[in-house]
Image (cartoon, rainbow, N blue to C red; front, side, top):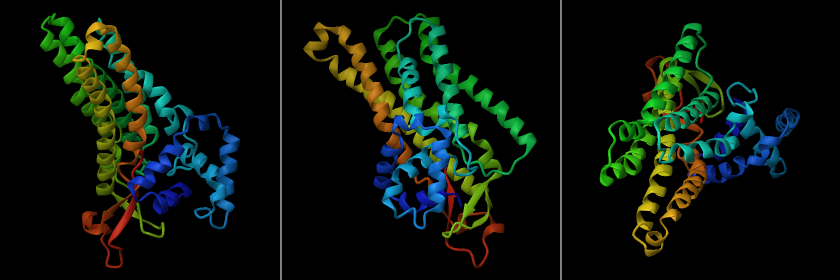
Length: 316
C-alpha cells in the first residue's frame, strides 16, 4: 500500500480530520514545488521510522498527498492536482454561471468547465483497475462524449431563453437562477460517473487493515465512484444555490432596489467564496480510504479467513 493511502487510512477516518487535512493540502502555494522537492519529500517519508507520528515531516506529507497519485506513485500533472482545482475551476465556474447574452459564450465557458472537470476526475481516479486496451479506447471515447454532452446540457438554460425569445420575468428567473442549481449538481455527478466508468465495470483493488491486497472488486469500484459523484454534486449544487439565494434576498432590500448594479458583483464574489469553502468540504464528505463490508463484495473474494471490512482507495 502506498504511503499516501497509509496516511489516509490512519488519519482520515473522521470528517473533521479530513477537513483539517484538506485545508492544509489545498494550499495553492505548493503547486510551485519542483519535482525534485516532491521526490525528496517522498524519500524522506519512506526512510522515516514512524512518519505517521513524526510532526516534523508535516510539509513532506502535504507535498506527497497533494502531488503524488497513491495508486501509481507517479506525479500528478500540476493543473490537475487538488491545490490547483480552485485557481483553475473558480473562474470557469463563475463565468459559467453568468447570465450570458448569447448562446456561444455560454457554450464556450461550459466546454472549458466540463473539459477541466473531466480531466481532473480522470487524473485523480482510482488507477488500480485492470488494464485493457479495448476498455481504454472505450473510456477515451466516453470522456469525449461526456464533455460534449455536458457542455450542451449545461448551456440549456441560455439556449432556451435565446431560441424561444422568452421575455417573462418569472420564466427567465427560473431558467437563470433555479434550473442551474439541480442541473449543475446533476452534470457534476454525471461527469464523475462516466469518466470513471471503468472502475465500476472492471473493479478496483481492495486491501485488508494491514495494507495487503485482497483482490479486485467491482462492488468497491462502484461504491468509490458513486461517493465521489455525490461529493461533486454537493460541491457544484451548493455553489450554484447559495449565491442565487443571496441575490434573491438582496433584491428585496432598499439598497439593492436603489443600486441594482450591486447584484452582479455580489453574485460573482459569493460564487467564488462558496466554491472555495465547499471544495475542502466536498473532498472530506467521504474517506479517501473507504470501507466496504465483506458481504458486499463478490463471492469469490469472500473467504473464511477474510476480515469483516476491507479498504479501497476512493479517488478524488
